[in-house]
Structures are given as structure tokens and as C-alpha cells.
Length: 341
Image (cartoon, rainbow, N blue to C red; front, side):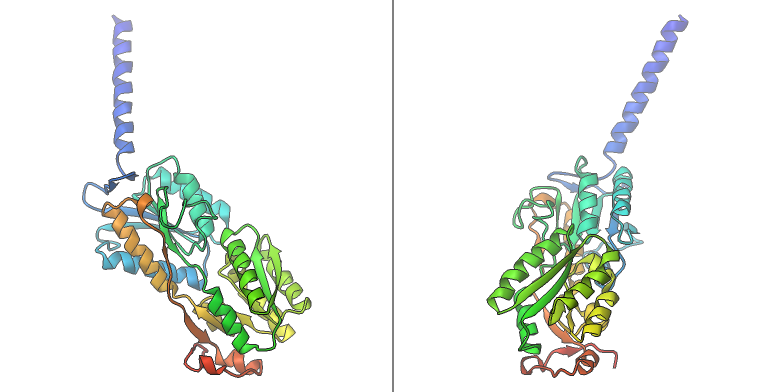
């Protein structure tokens, strides 16, 4: 009799555990076709991993919240956001992404390529969709099969730099220049991709590219000094996270060599670069927020094309221009001056 009761009790416990597991598995996330379900009270939770703290990525997050709010998803009302900043450490990205997947958020959002790669790895065996921003080459990063058809439960916005316009700008500011210096992180797919494109465009416009790769932020200062020592007439900065995090070291090396740094967005120019065909990262974040809202409303991320930024605005820093003894080219008289003066 006691043996029979023990068997019955064990069976009941196992059944209860199975029921709890089933409920947990259904509590969040997205199926391949039906979108996220949200909580029972009509609220949703988004886990956001931002790779590092610097102005362009901060602007992406600001725009992301605005894009969501414009579509009716407001933090503190029907939306909870678990925002985590990895401070430039991929190990932190991995841990944060895994924790968010375990907690069954309704949607993951990643700001910058390393953060999204961690989320993609953590969520690949789940049904949680991912939306990304500030990823220059999501195909090379292995996040999507193509721009038009992502194929995986991951999509977002791409900050492909307008390199043709940037090289034209460099030629206008420095008509006699022959060498463009670049510092890039060898493990960042977006930087490698941008470098390959720049090399082709530069060659077509009479430039040689002097590229020095780094593996971490501690190497940026010496890489910048190396580029200057090799005779670069300027340095062109991408949206490389390691380099942007250490932009002051790049600008110091360039100033010591008497050459300008061309940035990739407005915040870099405010902080000491000469000029840029600038991407609006707040607007990029807004695009991403609107895409996230569509996914929360039921759209399938795997069939939602990646959206690329289309516009770039020329900006320059008149203080830097004066310090370098340069004049504003005729074609850029209408460019926005973003100096502090």
C-alpha cells in the first residue's frame, strides 16, 4: 500500500512539473509566424544589450525608444525594457544575452554588431525574435541570409557608411592628398567590410589606403601613431566600436602629425574630427523602434527585410578647420558647423 502511494505521489509531482514547464515555455517569445504574445495584461518586455557607451550608440537607443513610443509601445505603460550596457566587453554581451533569453523576454534588441552576435547565439535555440541597429554588414556577421530575406528570426537596421560621399569630401578638403589612414578592429565584421569597400573606392579616386588592424582598445593609440608615421595625409574613421571608444587617442596622434581625422557621424565631428558625411543615429534608432513595434504586433522577423540608412548630412568643425589651417571647400559651404563656438 505504501509503495503504491509513493508511486502515485511521484507521478503527481512529475505531472505538476511538466505543467509548469509547459507554462514557462509559452510565457513569452515568438513563433516563426505569429509574433510575440506579450504578458497576460497586454504588456511586453524587451531586453536591450548595447555594446558600449559612446554617443552614436547612445543616440541609437534614444531613437529606439522614440520609434517604439510613436507606434504605441511606451516604457512604463505597456512596455518594460531591460537595458544593459556591456561596456565594450563581449563576455558581458554573452552573459547579458543569455540571462535575457532565460528570463523569456518577448523581444531582444541589440545595439552594435558584437551585442547582436551575442544575442543571436544565445537565442538561436529559442523562439525569441531579435531586432538590431548599428550593424553595418549583418550578412558578413552571419545574422541574416540576405538583406531582402533575413531567413532567421533576426532583422533590423544597417548603418552602411556612405563611403563614396566620404571619399569625395576628403578629396575636396585635401585636394593634394594621396594616402588615407584607417584603424580598424580585425574581429569586427562591419569594420572589415567597410575597409574592403573603402579600398576600392579610394583607388578609383587616386588614394592609397594605409590600414592598421587592432584586436582591442589598448592598441588603438599605437595604431594611430603607426598610420601617421607611414605618411597618411588624413585618417578616416569608421563606426568601429574600439576606435570610437578611443577617438581622443586617434585625434591626438593625428594632431601631433598635423593631419585631420574624418569621422563617420556628427558626434565624432563634435569631438574633434574635421568633417563627415554624417549618419543620423537617432533617426536610425527610430527606424529600428518602428520595426520592433511591428514584430511585437505580430509580424515575422524572418521575412522582414533589413532596412538601410539612406541619407547622410555633411558636417564640419570650424575650430578644427582653423587649427589645421584649412579652408572650407566651395562644395561644402552649406555644410553644418558643429563646433562648440
